[in-house]
Amino acid sequence: MEHITLLADKRIILGVTGSVAAYKAVDLASKLTQAGAQVDVIMTDAARQFVTPITFQAVTGRPVYTTMWQTAAGDGLPTHIAHVGLGEGADLFVVAPITANTLAKLAHGLAADLLAVTALAVRCPVIVAPAMDGGMYQHPATQANIALLQARGVLLIEPDEGRFASGLVGKGRFPDTSTLIGHIRRALGRGGTLAGRHIIVTAGGTREALDPVRYLTNHSSGKQGYALAQAALDAGADVTLISAARDLPVPVGAALVPVDTTENLLRAVMDAIDNADALIMAAAPADFRPAQVAAQKIKKSGDIPALSLSQNPDILMAVAGQRHTSGWPRVVVGFAAESENVLANAQAKLAHKGVDLLVANDITAPDAGFRADTNRVVLLDAAGSQQSLELASKTAVAETVIQRVAGLLNTAS
Ligand code: CTP
Image 1 (cartoon, protein in one colour):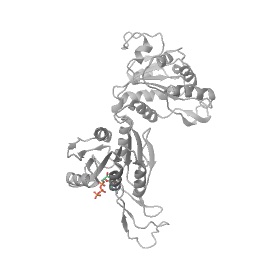
Image 2 (tube, rainbow, N blue to C red; image 1 turned 180 degrees about the vertical axis):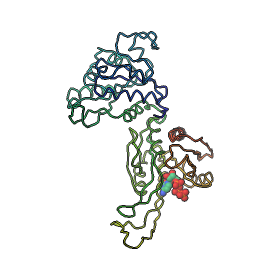
Image 3 (spheres, rainbow, N blue to C red; image 1 turned 90 degrees about the vertical axis):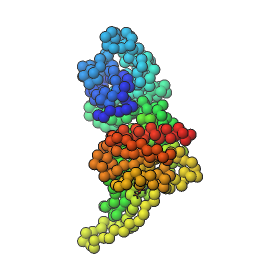
């Protein structure tokens, strides 16, 4: 699990209740800790029927709290009253999994155990992930309790549909760890530097059909674009991810618009940019498409086909035209994939395409560019500044680009 800037040094209280899924909360506690968060676990008595406190203690490196009557002397809590001490300074209270019983307790303000008392004491956002068997989740009593909690600002992570341990099938399964962490990031990112902003990110290489079987594309993996979408979400933005990449996990909270060809990408971008604060064009649109698309598979028994190509539209140029009249998007970021004369070519693209910030990378470097998990880029802006970044993960590059976008937006409005 890689370090997550947003989670670093955040204090998370993880409440665990008595569901079979309690064992999956161990992985959640472990991954949150690996990502840099400080995780204090509270277990109900029922949770301890499924997992022991020592397991959580081992993965978090922190004491685990199981009773209201446990005092904090020596446990590093700021006060001797456990529920107040735990709640103090917490950034987020996550109850995962939460049973129907604990949902009811929280909805009605009952304070019978340490977890429920802490829920009354905390001042931070509360997020709950229900996990329960059969029809319990859909039962009107459970739904009414959830509605009550949501009306009070509690965030809900919807359970998945699927097969339960009992063999029944329905809605109520505990989501996987990465989905839970995505929701936790969303909750922690609220109020970030891009709060209230709408950011559009494009990602991946487009595909241009030759016949129903074959297509032309390029080596773009979409990784840098997806990292940018996640970084924008972490900064509190509403994110539309227009993606030609298909196999990457979509960051929780991003509105996905799948596309295939450059022309589709153009349409999706033009539909989305009205009132968008920023457009980040990390996609690698194919510049050419086959002049004719064969309706049927081209058979190898015939003549070897000659490939004749047509020019695709340039999306950034079309955006520049629209922006000239509407003023939106406020900020446009382009990428430059270069295999020679990187800086000179990038400077020319910056001016020609009318972007505010250009992320230039040398695609011939083995540890950067397409498919790699790392990137080595130079950021050029319209004011003439140049920022060379050391070799860094695509995540770190994305965070720097997002900071620059936030800065540009602050000066633009
Ligand atoms: N781009 C675009 N529309 C295209 C091709 C590229 O909007 N049809 C965008 C890319 O998303 C990127 C920037 O333009 O943000 C530069 O892309 P790049 O492939 O480096 O340059 P091209 O414009 O395609 O020019 P060339 O291939 O001649 O280097």
